[in-house]
Image (cartoon, rainbow, N blue to C red; front, side, top):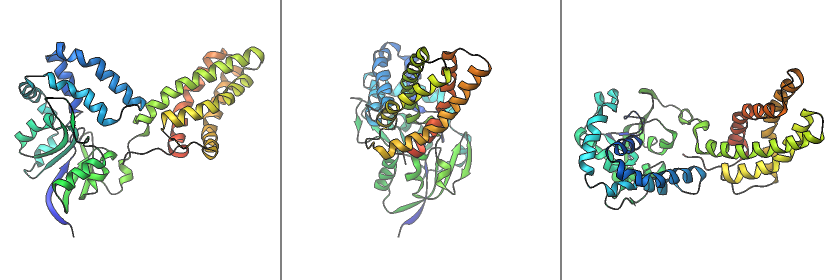
Length: 327
């Protein structure tokens, strides 16, 4: 039987620290050492883009984005100066209840959190990056990996409480007797983990969907314009172009935006159903703008696409494609 210990678990970024400490440190370091850091900007940008596109995993991306530390001979001094100017981003509610038994569990690098943790006299479990080589040691401390690391450090323990801002930390939160959601410095007791669900419109899938949407929009727009050269009715031309673009849209959304490698006829059917609201919304917009306000065809098609994108993504995200949700 697990024993309850008077230990509290805390996520760091956006929980007890206002913002993302890795991002703040990169900006700070650029200002202090622009000659060194500018050499890494192309690598960092490329890594971020590849992560968004799904060709680089989170561990690999983090290593490439933070690998510049290996060229910072005065890293300890820079970290001291960083925390002198950023310690005020620690949440007051946390500082008021801080205890020596606290454990900070973060996907941010340990070398970055350790200095402030030593000042607070608390324990840190975080992503380990070798500052001499810039390489990750082990896995990125994220999601289920957080829970594994905690269990390894404190086997057979149920913790008194846990705090986080993100659904990514549900595995960690489940280790505690009670857990709290932190949003903009405000705390609320978590009774149902569905309350923790992050907005789908902030997900990596949404960014990929926007990219795919741009390609689909170009294809649909091109087909609609070509059809409009042969058909007098702008509405009919739109409908034909829309229908012809659907198979390509299904393939790109499935394989690229949602990383679903099990595409089949059943999913194509659900895809078509998911697109019906988008189709009717766009059709209504096209009908009103062209028939009632005599808008030009091309601007009308563009406006209708922009209105339908969020609704379409929500339906594809929840109904059509089976994606590996972050737990």
